[in-house]
Image (tube, rainbow, N blue to C red; front, top):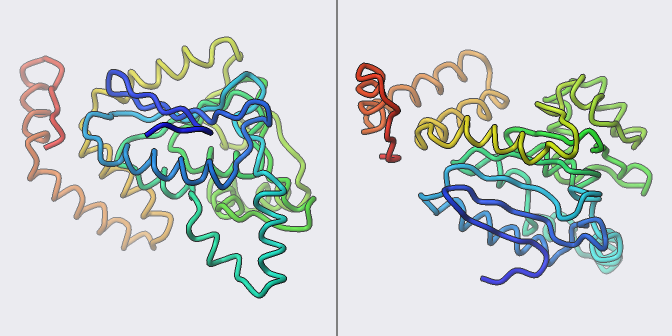
Length: 265
């Protein structure tokens, strides 16, 4: 499928999604929403994809937020006519779709990550930021609030106090502050962002696909469960993984002092 607002590339087991509207700082739009859903659906079903990278075109923005006229004003008009934003919102792309991918997802944040851009970065498993990046949830300045999981994921990732500050003021933070509070995993000079992403890919791509998927499931479920329930869930996933060929291959490779050849089976 040919996309207009994103670029989807697959090579050597790596899928790369690039938001491709640099003239408007890669702003999110209904068209981009449809294309992201299609791209992510295809990646989820592609057994050849081992790692996913999400980034923005150009060197100014990861994603600046949503098109005001095509999303927010459209929803205002819909509400005036008796429609429900919730019903329309449900069909939009959600960062949750990235969490639910079986593959690890890396956000390569190369500039502004505002509003939906910040929310998409939060939906990725690992965030690597250029030192020029900025993060923010500025919805409050428009008289609205986060709608893509920003207030929820921020709270769980950086704590209630900082989440309240970011969401209530709408003020952005720079990459170093994002690292200090745990919003991002790494900050590197902008010129070294791609090298840092490549290094992280190397750390992930040869791990077993089933083990990666199960680990993601356990960690994300932990945020929704009590400790005992989460440990039981982890135990079930742990038990099930021994039914796989990868579990046997991993043990044999270790004993034979070679790199395992996982097949995702």
